[in-house]
Each structure stands twice: as C-alpha cells, then as structure tokens.
Length: 134
Length: 276
Image 1: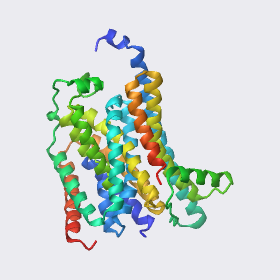
Image 2: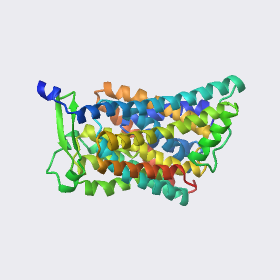
Image 3: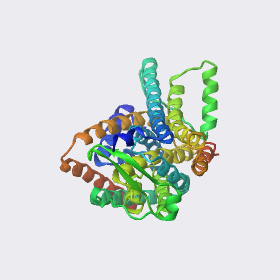
Image 4: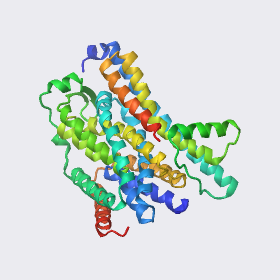
C-alpha cells in the first residue's frame, strides 16, 4: 500500500477501524467477566463449604426470567456463590448479544447502511425471541 | 454426578485437544461426558454454552486484527441462528440414539474436511450480482505475505441456505460446527482461508447463543457441570491455540486429528448398537 493510500483513509474506513476494536473488546471483556464470575463463585463456595459442587438447577426459566429473578435476589442482599455462578452463565450469553446490538447501532448510525441495519435487526430480534422462549 | 476434581482437568484436556486439532472443545467434551455417564442432551447443552466462551474469546483477537468480515458475518448469522433454534428443538424432541449417530457422522466428515482442505484451495472468481448487492467484499492485512489482500465473495445465494444447515448441526449437536462453516466460506463463497476461519468464529458465538437459549428453557443447563466445563474448556482452548501458533510440525496435528477420529467412530458404534 502506498503512503497516500494509508493516509487517504476515508471517514468510513476510520469508523470501521474503531468498530473492529469495539467489537473485539466487547467480546473479550464479556468472556473474561463471565469466567471471572464463575471462578469467584467456585472460590467463594470452597471457602464457605470446602466443596465446589453446586447442586441447584435452572429448570424451566428463560434468560429474561432467570436474569430478573437473580437480580431481585441480589437486590435483597442475598449474595451467594450460586448467584455469581448464574450471573457468570448469563454474562456469557449476553456477550454475543451485545456484539450484535452494537453492530446494529454501527450500521444504523455509523455507516447509515440500511440494508445491513435490517439484517442485523433481524438477528437481534431472533435472539431476543430465543432469550424469551417459553 | 461427576465431581469437579474430575471434570475440570478433563475439560481443560478437551479444550486443548479441540484447539490442537483445529476444532472447538465441543467435539471432544460431548463424547467424554457421555462416556462418564452424563445424558447426551445435558452434554450437548453444556457444550454449546462453552462454545460461546471459546468462540467469542478467539473471535475478539481476530476482529481487532481487522481480519474478520463483519458484513459476511452478519448476513450469514441470519441463517445460522434460525438453523440453531430449529436444531436445538429437534434435539429436545428426538431420542438419544440418532443423536449419537449424527454426532459420529458429523465428526467424521469434519475430520475428513480438516484433513483434506488445504489453503491453496482458495481462488477468486467473478462476483455475481446478488453477492455484489450484499457488499460482501473486503481486504485484510496479511502479515505472512506482508501486504493487504483484497477479495470479493461470491455465490452468497448458495452459501446462505448451506449456513442454515450448519446452524441446524450446531444447535442439534451443541458444537460450533466450525469445520462445516469454513468449508462453505472457502469452497462455495470463495473467501480467503484467514477471513473464513475468523468470520466463522464470530458467527459461531451468536449461533451458539440461539441454541443455548433453547437448552436453558428446557432445564438442560446444569450449573454443576457448567462451572468446570466453561472454565476448563476456555483454559484448554487458550493453551492449545498458543501452542498451535508456535507449532510447525504437522505430525502433532495429525495425532490430535486421530483422537477425534476415534471419538467419532466410538460415538457411531454406540449409536448403532443402542442401549445407551
């Protein structure tokens, strides 16, 4: 690539450059945060009970129901190892979702590309549907 | 129930073997969990959850390196997520036996694909009107070549329905089905190998989320299994990927591919014999 080619990047390209970084960091931070929550849950459980076995189930609840019930529990101050573990699982599921959401905002406002805004919105709506499944 | 002390090292090993063979940890952990007595549907559910961690983790690095094509990813995700929802619903409805057989067959064909595909298979061709309309093209900095590679994808009309099929496989079996996706990107859509593997990684995360949601509502995600498997596979995949980058000897990779073949045959035999 010539020097003029490098410096001659359009605004669009510069935006794309930032977008790649943002998407990359969303994925990285989401996964690391989720792993940290799971690890913290295990360490806490070990310190309190000298075992790392969790014997509860997540039966019959979708993502949204699970998230609201866990957050409600957290709000009452009932912070327990299992709450951290569930939040770790939920954080992991939230990571790709956030990536799609940010991509849609980028296509809509950054690139003003309506074709891809519609495509990304379809993915987002389908994911929301799957997170609210009964 | 299997103890954490056993499951954690096994998951690290599964993540490591998967990464060294060029696949995800799912293809290793599912057969191993079923051998340890876990019901295959629970194994599939836990595996697909861990797939989100491994694929998003590695996708993050590739996206930041500007190799991943966001538009190709977004377009094809429309098809894979619908496929994954359908696939996971099928798994909930059917008996375990066909799952073993399909798992064995998919693993065997992915194994063949990994063994046979070579980077030299990539070649560009004329871009059709539909793919041009979709703006599926791009460029990326190739560090090995020391230059920017420009490419134009093609045959998106053919790639899209095939990606729906790849999504069904991912949701059905709880794996990333990366080998299938890469094959579609390379051979059908004419994407350069680096772009196809990295973009497939990004697609896998979203596809796995759709599948995971179905398994979560069905009550198949067991926190007891999730903790060691997520942490273990992520650790193993991280170590395996680091090793793979440094490794030049193809014999080591063949050894890990051989392990995958044994797992595939073993799943097939259990499926055909029945009495699981």
